[in-house]
Image 1 (cartoon, rainbow, N blue to C red):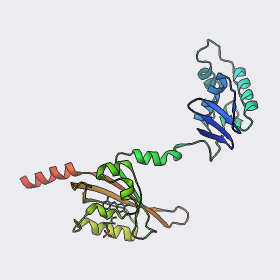
Image 2: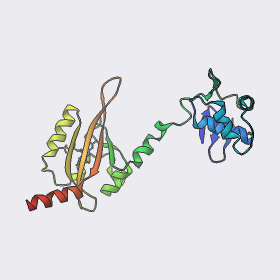
Image 3: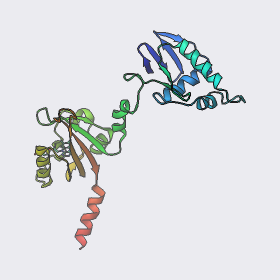
Image 4: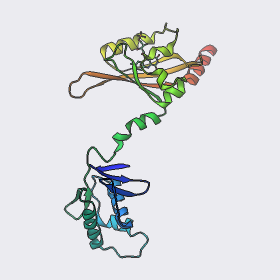
Length: 234
Ligand SMILES: Cc1cc2nc3c(=O)[nH]c(=O)nc-3n(C[C@H](O)[C@H](O)[C@H](O)COP(=O)(O)O)c2cc1C
């Protein structure tokens, strides 16, 4: 369900609109028109582009008047929409900032589907606990997000705390800078995982205050094992 404006929703599955909880009857051409507007919200579209997408199954010759009429009928049916005319005859459905989703609304989804582990920690809370882990993190280390959240990421090291790279992390966190190191971490079932982790501070753009740390975890176990074998040979 996409919120077009206050009290006006577009159901992508049934391709219907409801206004103040009442469904609004639209002709199939109007529905196609509205779908194109929604898919390109905020971007001007030429009448010819509308025409050939809407009259796709007819052998009609292009006629901008058909589009003008269709748009004015849509405006009558859905006065809540803001459809603007641009110089040159193009039209755009103006974006209602809090309604039509764009990629920002999918950011968590995007992070969740990333192939590397992603963690976010909150340095303004005691012991810099994890506040977000993505799916790749939970499948790499075998912990559920509930098990990982609110803990400091060091739990992945278990008792293997004598690692030089940890000093680099401590320093980077202290001076709020990026760092990339390879750590020995452990899966929930106990297997050793060589984890190439990059940790970056995230600042508030306006206040420049440190808000979060972003961690990106990459499994480099196979590579490390090959390197160790090579070292053993030479
Ligand atoms: C965002 C973020 C992600 C981190 N990811 C890992 C990780 O994947 N594995 C790990 O062993 N340590 C990770 N750390 C480092 C530990 O949390 C911790 O900073 C490190 O163990 C050094 O501090 P300590 O001496 O307090 O343990 C991460 C830290 C931050 C801030």
